[in-house]
Image (cartoon, rainbow, N blue to C red):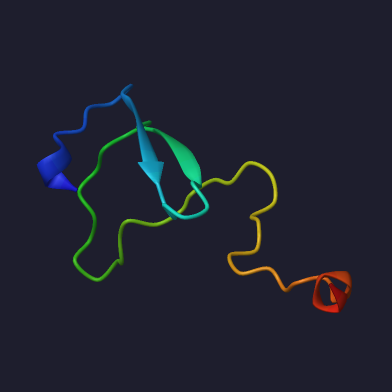
Length: 64
């Protein structure tokens, strides 16, 4: 994360799955040094429900 040279107040984008084109907006609210035993990065806030990564196909699709 240090390589990104982030600063408080900046916004950047992140594409998770190039096939499904899942785009995320990341707002840098604060930058703090983490205790050595903590795991980072981590999600601290979500807006809305996360979509399934590999949704099951509908039964109707199998009949075609």
